[in-house]
Length: 177
Ligand code: 5GP
Image 1 (cartoon, helix red, strand yellow):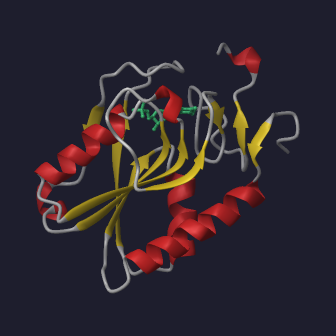
Image 2 (image 1 turned 30 degrees about the vertical axis):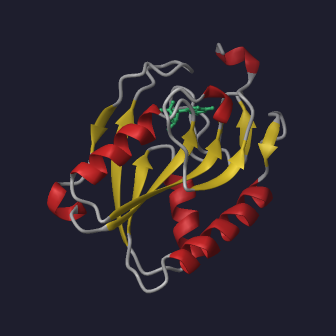
Image 3 (image 1 turned 60 degrees about the vertical axis):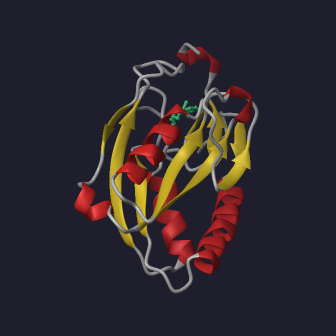
């Protein structure tokens, strides 16, 4: 199905790494019931696979953070919608994000969650592009570290396209990147 694209991580590689990350969460959060928050929309496939792999008693929720406006470059401004403070206060929050790029999004989200009274805040990202970091931020759990390429699939989009692809692939050149 995705043969015409340059596959960076196949569905098998993704499943194997997600299983390892799930086992890490299960071990690190044993005896706790964390609040796992997925960042919409890009993290939804990773979020669902990760939580099934972790088999960890938890609560779930979602938030939105948008900084990309029909482009592959971050605007720097991050608009956030998140659960109410009373859902966050006292919780051990695990924030699940698709990709860490400049770091602006997760820097802002983790700060907001702490301000809302979370007991602890950890972040887990499927992909990390450290070469592009501008914010002073690193994730607690990382699936794969990747070079500076714009990737899509497994929930990640370009202008709302490609999310459905089961593999993580490099954005095809003819899409304007
Ligand atoms: P940051 O705030 O760290 O610069 O950006 C994080 C967000 O930028 C991610 O949640 C994602 O929406 C978007 N992003 C960054 N790099 C990529 C990429 O290579 N592919 C896609 N599809 N989105 C990306």
